[in-house]
Length: 325
Length: 287
Image 1 (cartoon, chains in turn green, cyan):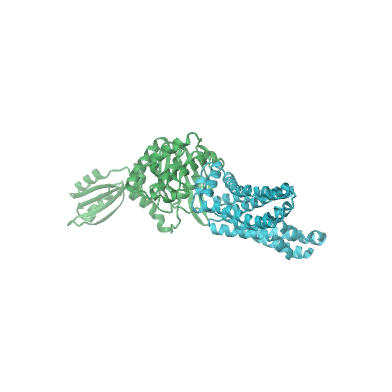
Image 2: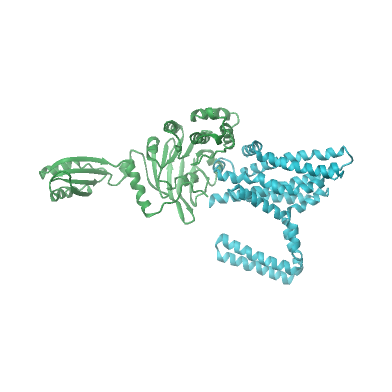
């Protein structure tokens, strides 16, 4: 469906997108997740052909966005970060204009526009000037524009911004229903939005793809994802010898517990291991009573922070995603 | 292209700009028409047309300033450039909308010679030749305005730039006459121009070798020619500057001569400006 190969975009000395490669399959909802300025918008602008990459290639349905731009763009509906609306037009006029741009046959256009206005809930606003619309309605008008012609690929850059909670739920349901027939790519810097609708998450940080998997598998990807919290009534030496006997333990930290004569341990182990039984018997052998044992998997939130944090420390990260010129 | 054309024309007619453009031209035309022909009784319509050329220096920037600059500022160019329309389609659609706005006052002006025929004998072919010349002249003004609007996202800058460029073209004849017509004057002017061009080349490519080679080649050729065939330098500045004297070609039309070379000249200016506009939009996507 969409193949991006070694995309790089350089603004002067700044690398906005750094050797990004990914493939997006048919009929799924993909989420681009990354902090502000990670290069999400730049990547989407390259995918839709608004800006050209410094190097690399994007193919939509086999059409290269650079060599066959018109063929490739016919397959895409795009809602940029700032909805591209003309304030001097009414909602309906604007959609008619956009339908003309997308070369939708004049016969089928009015029905399609009425249908889309119904889906996005802007039918009541159709004769209002866009200038007078609130942010939420503008966002929805932009969304209706992106859906015109029901293109196979729909790319939405931060579609939920500016919507109230009820609208967010509506748009989320809309995107989910779109995902059945279309390939949808959406971006956000808010994790809960992405994990609520997406079948597949791509985490981008500083122009690089740092992780790409399903929301369920993403936690498993992380090295040392399994964290075990343990409180044992014993002395430090004994606890160390128990933990050192386990091969699966990658690292641990010890500190005196708040409970008298006990030690707290935070143990990180290999992803596919479950240490609980081995530790139980290990402690039992040493007559050390386990007071508390808890397995904690890293949440998506933790993964997101960990994946994107390291680099923000080393670099300034002042690039804005909407940096287009 | 058709969708963009329709939107632009509608947008001009829904806002004050389009009417301002039409009204401004018609009011001034009406004043001159009354003074020259109705009061003065002079039967040559091209007098009026010659007088109103200066109005286009102000009216054209008003019409063209927002046409591409505003798209960029509002980021609506993102819709145009990601839809299945070629960049040249966008530019031509916009240009045709501008020409349509010009066509409206031109058609109204076409009635004026007919009014004059009520009062005496008026040469209609001469009048309409002059009007066609004005249409071509203003059409090339619009193309220049369209190009300059594509270079910035600020309407005001686009308008001021367009006015300055049009004004320079308007007074180019006068500028050319400042320079002496001797061969050495042309030679020195070209030597300086070549040096400036080489510097510009260096600035744009940041390539010392290319710029230096271009500089030496140009200066060498100029010097060699100056010593071998000094006669070609005589009046050369005037000839070169004359290319940019857009309003000059119009005088042939006002004399009632349908000047084919003038038509080709104006059409070339339009084509070059539209081409530059496409390039300026494309360049921004790659930078």
